[in-house]
Length: 496
Image 1 (cartoon, rainbow, N blue to C red):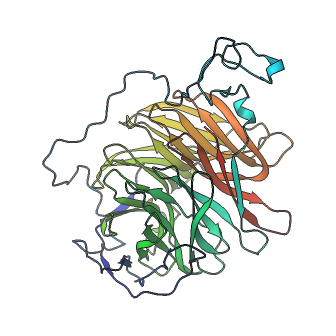
Image 2 (cartoon, rainbow, N blue to C red):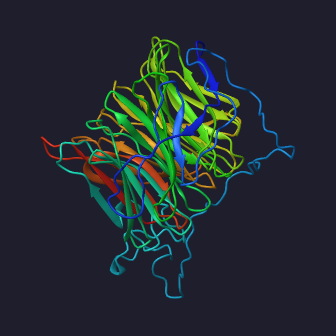
Image 3 (cartoon, one colour):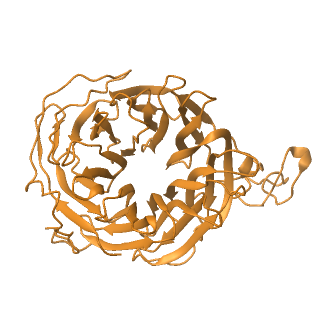
């Protein structure tokens, strides 16, 4: 694929002036700082001033290319991902006392005991749960709706668990950046909000957790005709450690889409920005744990169309896997997967080019560096089908799965989580015969075969997925309210 323009910008962080923001409860602080129109960052770091990264912002109209090899100054041995050794037995087995008298786990379906299945093993979530109920019948153990008939389109699109099993949900709620933390028993600990531009449509509020259980987040700020990135870090109690605003090279709309914290606790945010030369460009910015901008890259097909980085994941060596949609003449949006080293050097990129528009959304990676990208691709009909593809660490395709919900209507996967053994959880929406799109979570084995599905009856879909240390699955999305109201944010947690 030719015609890709890019710039690799170190950027500058400068001090800003604090401004008043809103926090509904807890100790979260306001967004601080001011913006500039040349593609620079402004913001504060906690309460103790700021620093500046080396270099300066690049010319948004230039094409300098990205480095293809690491420029790290570390003289130590290079990080090596472990080698694949074949199929594994999974990492989700739960202990089960089969007992001498049989019962659940003895391989015999005993209806009198209330069993609907019995596969004779101690593996939960493999089609038959440890209590001998079907995995497909498992209901959420926690559900939350936020927003409602207020005139705003509300949506949930952030979910994460910390090391203690505390849950963080985030989203676009009542025209604000909304972040809330719960303990493992789903008791609310605190809520932090930041005002969003009045009237802006549902936007992404991704969250991620670092090694100290601090919460990295992204959202939007600015005005309706000049939406900017809001990036920051909260401590475990909801207090703001730092925040910064990114404004692209022109006073237009820039949107973050996803955030990840790597093994060095550096923060990476991906999304899009508007460029007066190239149109909407895909964007990736990497920050230190203290909020200093390390490097950034902006890519465009160069035809004035909209290119967007949708999702980012980090492997065990701090390499970055990024899924994107890139517009090309004649084929609409195409799915792109790129792998960067920790310093922003491009290691490889892969394209899925169909005759019609294809969307690459979520991406996840396992301990071997194998990545799974999720999206949507037209099938036999012009409507979208579920689409998943797995690559090894070198970018070689391992498998691809694509299927229709049965109604020849829109089906899509918006996010994925990949366990250490290659097990994949996928979340999105599916349309079955005679129905409307509704949210669905699927579990797939390491070879891409569906193990189970869990449906939600409300009209809507899941946008974000997270997995806890104890195996619980959290999802965030939106459900449509009855006419004439807009959507409301919808969150849920499933047992392992």
